[in-house]
Length: 257
Image 1 (cartoon, rainbow, N blue to C red):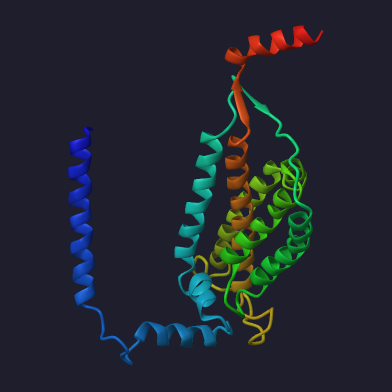
Image 2 (cartoon, one colour):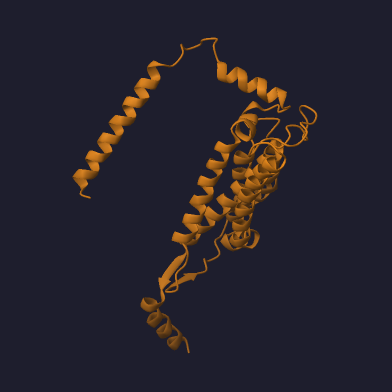
C-alpha cells in the first residue's frame, strides 16, 4: 500500500470516528444532572455483594467477562513481545558492565524497594475495599523489583527476576482467572458468577470471588510487566551477529595469547 493510500485510509477512519463521537456527545445527559442510572445500580449491586469498592465490584463481578478480555490483551502483548524479541541463533548477547551508582541513589533506592513492594501487595490485597486493585498493584510490584536495577546494576536485577519464572506467573494468573470463571459454571451458575459467600462487609474476606479474581489479575499483571521490561532491557545489551563478529573475537583472542 502506498503512502498516499495509507493517508486516505487514515483520514476516512478518523472522520468516521469523529462522526461517532459527535453523535454520542449530542446524546449525553446534561452536565451536573442528578440522573445517573448506571452509577446508582452499580453502587446498589456492590453493596448487595458486600464489596466496599464499587470499581472492583464492576470490574470483577458485574462485568468480570470484560476484565478477562482486558487481561487477555496484556497476556497476548507479552506473548508477542517474547516471540518477536527472542534471541536468535546467530546473535550473541554481551553481559553489561557493572555501573557505578552514587551512594545517595543506591541508599534511597534500596530503602524504597521493600516499601514499594509492600505497597503493591497491599493495593492488590485490599482491592475490594479501597481504590486500586490487581492492575494497579501488579504494576507497583513489578516496578518495585526494578528499583534494584537503579540501586545496584542489571546483574543484581537478573538474580531476583528470572524471566522464565515470571512468564509462568503471567500464564498462571491468566489461567486462574479462567478457572475461577469456570468454577461458577460448575456451581450451577454463569461463567465468572460469584459462587462463594459474600462475607462480612468491609473486611478482607468480603466480596465473594472478587478478592480471588483481583489477586489473579495482580499476579498476571506483575508477571507481565516484569517480562515485558526484561525483554526490552535485554535489547539494550550489546547483541552481535556471530557470523559478522566471530572473526573479530577470534583475532582478539589470538592477540591476547
